[in-house]
Image (cartoon, rainbow, N blue to C red; front, top):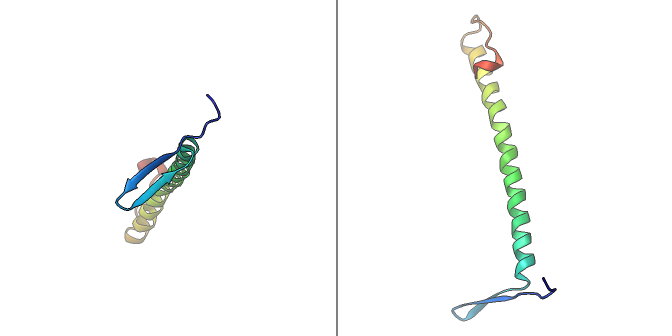
Length: 74
């Protein structure tokens, strides 16, 4: 592949949207999407322990005399 830059111009009414260096722009958009997916994944990893903690606190408050649950119950 040569070192050419590919540009795209889209006309929207009286305005223009210019994308310079489409290949690099697509790469930047990909990097942003990977970062967002990383954040979403981190939140997803946080959800399960929060659910387990909430259940344990809730169970401890309602039925303190009940047998203890194990982590495998959830």
